[in-house]
Length: 382
Image 1 (cartoon, rainbow, N blue to C red):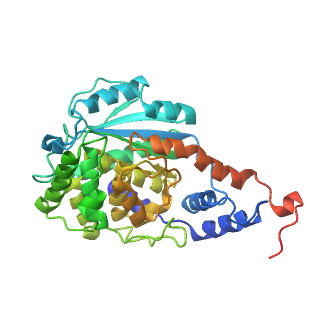
Image 2: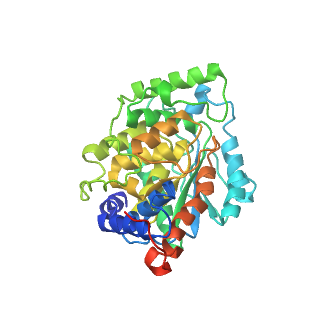
Image 3: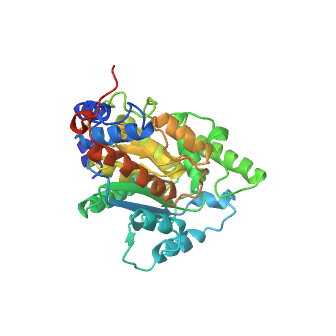
């Protein structure tokens, strides 16, 4: 499934990008007056291969949940059982993500890819459990390469199913106590940044725990023989709209060349939810459905997805900028401009949910705003 998805993925269509830019310039407004919204509309046109792009609705949020062996190092003040408890909260409709999803009219699906407990069946719960949490990444690989591919394919499968059910936009969500430690390790590995630059406070830790967290990230990179920028694609220009990414080797197998290295890094220091979200992003991109990224967990996952297929970035929209320092580093490396900056650090998909109406508004402009010619409005002389 992974090889098939990578083979199907294409970069932004240059003709659609050009048509979308030209259409923006003909609308009854000063050129560039909608700022980043114009970039979003053009991006979605390139991703879809048509201008104007399809409306990105209805949208579907998938919250991928998993536990982390690195929790045993004391990197989070929250007990590990909070992961399973929050899954129950999502399914009961009591989390912030549920409230934001209801406001935006977005469906919520929860996917167990590695929660350290057996979960009761529920209509909105998908069981794709690979193991009962990862191993401690600071003492060896968090998962095997085979498990990493299994998690990637779990995410691809969820994306395919949601698109087949009618979703025209996918939003990433996550849940996993201690997953910001794995995120920092992935971001350091894929961007080449020092762990101290990309390791944040997560859900709230003391200075002493923060120092331990940085040390743990350093240990994880060393013990797994991961060096800065291992398996990474090159940094991209901001927004990625200036030119489509090159389509690299659609026929390559995921266990060959740079893709093998990307899987090794993901398996070494990632979490099951990181790998599944990376697959979710790849699956949406292969279906030419836009993917709105949430915060630092999604940013780390997107780096892994981009290392597997650089063109995937053309299909992503950065919903927001998290308060986590690693998220800004990830977005800069990916060349993505965040739509919302409210100092959020919750995860769950909350930032992506807040951004979805903005993305819809950007596309609606392309469909409904008159051109100077059609409205009989005099355009400003060049």
